[in-house]
Image 1 (tube, each protein chain N blue to C red):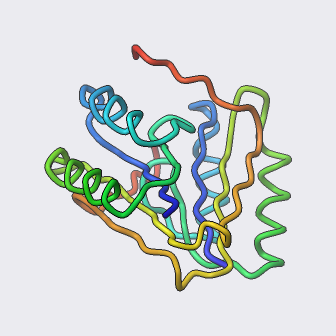
Image 2 (image 1 turned 90 degrees about the vertical axis):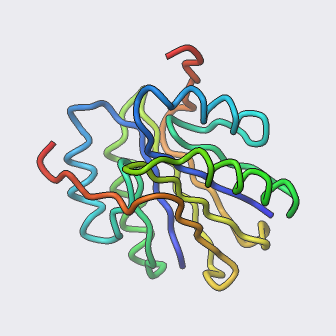
Length: 85
Length: 85
């Protein structure tokens, strides 16, 4: 499946979620990852996120099993990840 | 079609893009909107974004014409929009 994950977590916790998601998906933009996951990978990532997310934070996980129907339009410059913010 | 828009623009310009996208889509999280658009609405929004986005900024527009294949998992709390940041 194709997955897009966006997150809004407290500033001090962004590095941890970023480091975790980087193992599974492509970093696209601040707080945005996307890429392909198998069903079992998806379940693993979802389970980690459910444990990680605290009150007052939110993660949205968009998935489609039909990646062929998905289109991505990139406007502007490719972002450079700042790894040690 | 179903559209997810995420943006990374300079701090002083977030309110303008936010105000624009709010007319067409649902605010979901900081820098994230989603919702349904017709093809002509999509073209209008895309055209506006292409004009708006400056060097060093980026907007990603994910679209699918098969909204029935899309699933959204919300982890954590629904975000409250801070309209006048």
